[in-house]
Image 1 (cartoon, helix red, strand yellow):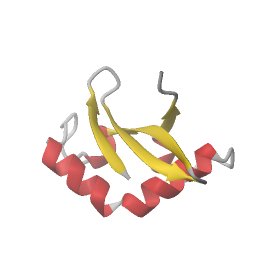
Image 2 (image 1 turned 90 degrees about the vertical axis):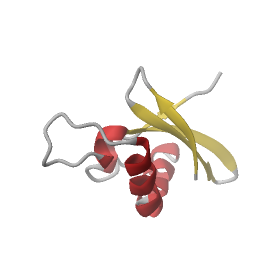
Image 3 (image 1 turned 90 degrees about the horizontal axis):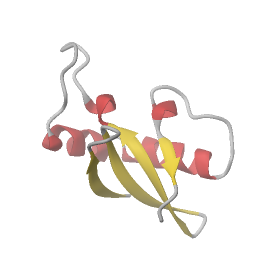
Image 4 (image 1 turned 45 degrees about the vertical axis):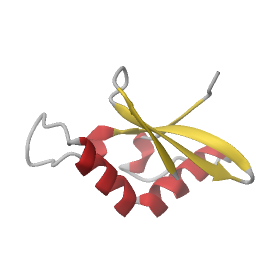
Length: 86
């Protein structure tokens, strides 16, 4: 999984991973990495990257599920969305 940075318009991190031999790009909401005890708090870039590294397998599994057209991933990974790159 490769993190391509933050998309300010969607408040998500753009990630790219391989699924069945093809590159798939998804948006991972930054709020997943936020400290839920602090209402409205945005995670720092460092916190978001650390969180994504620690949850890499679950993020990749959710992206693969979505890319294969399977059932929606379980919460909170159901908030991940696939995008088409132009």
